[in-house]
Length: 334
Figure 1 (cartoon, rainbow, N blue to C red):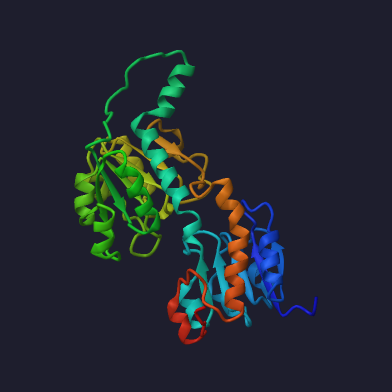
Figure 2 (tube, helix red, strand yellow; figure 1 turned 45 degrees about the vertical axis):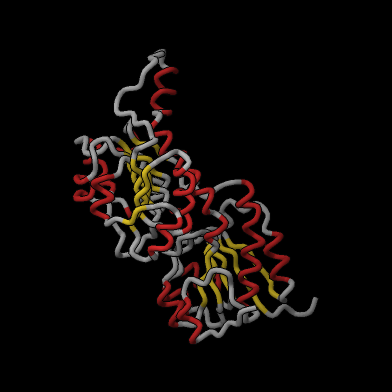
């Protein structure tokens, strides 16, 4: 092979067991891929990625100083949906395309959200624990909703929110959603009533969060929001931890403002072992795994390699997060 023209760093392999497909896709455009461990310190990132033409990142904080040190970089790819670990404005200023792969994970996250909702409704963990301790009660402690005819509120009607709406419709939920960035036609297509954030809090029996973490959404579920919710309602969060104020959530649970919560994401990951949410029977926790299926993870390296290779060779990726960058980094559509 001739001298390689590009260098791409894959930072933090996460669940990717074999990056061969990514390496092969990049080699086809004369790019060399190097694996790096999980890095979180800004100075380590700067030192380790100098000279990169592209980055593939799991959760590394790609800040403005990191981006400014990448004199040749054209693309930063985030291996999931959320891009809150990348300073988008800085990347755009510097002519760097930010890419994600949201379509790989939509079904898995929607499935996980529904699984958490059902676990809350059917009190799966509580029942399992009771049986193991010798309590074979043949009824549930209330509240136990029937699902059909109850109301599911979806906060964020993007890919994942829509996938959840399709699944929930089969369970005969009444569906509500709030999302100021989605047109009415999408709400109509998925049979979801458009409501305000305040109304979705007031009416929902279950609230499933599918919005990104931004300045606008940080702690949107705080004390005021929890006070508006039904005392029989459950909160499900498979989006980003900081969307929920955990101090306010704990108070809501302690004072019975809501019935319970199911969280795949938390404000600090992993959480402090003294976090009182870990000791509550009406909280279900999973470890930021909503995205996961063997099939989805297996397809990730190929997509990462394809998307980065496209940008390196001047072509438009499937999911460009910052289209404003095209003013500085022209990319052609195939």
